[in-house]
Length: 178
Image (tube, rainbow, N blue to C red; front, side, top):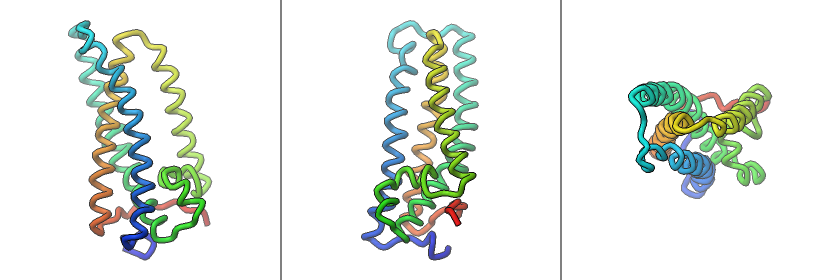
């Protein structure tokens, strides 16, 4: 572990908390909104046909693996936590104010990271617009998969952040500008 990713002192931990908690709140807000739509077939009593249920189970499993495990646990979470602890060890006022965006690689990053991070944001917005056009129950099925992936991601973020607070900061490229 180097100075850039060393666990910060108690006062600096607030910066890491702000960055990670801000990201977690964004994820939680999306999770709650989508969970309401995802639950509709089950709380309304309409349910799903056998075919729809099979598609739903398959989609949730695909989402858990691709979004939850590969997207969040293996990439987004370690980068987010590593950047939070870097910022805590070398705070700059503007970046501290923008800590959640900094942790997500949306500001103060190499051009490639900025393009990648902002492209993901744009793709998520487009996906939201397209999925909203789906008829019931397909929108709920898609949203249920996303909810599963987001939940996995939030759990991975909490576990990784707790480990980092105990000194096990993820070793992950920070993609900071030169």
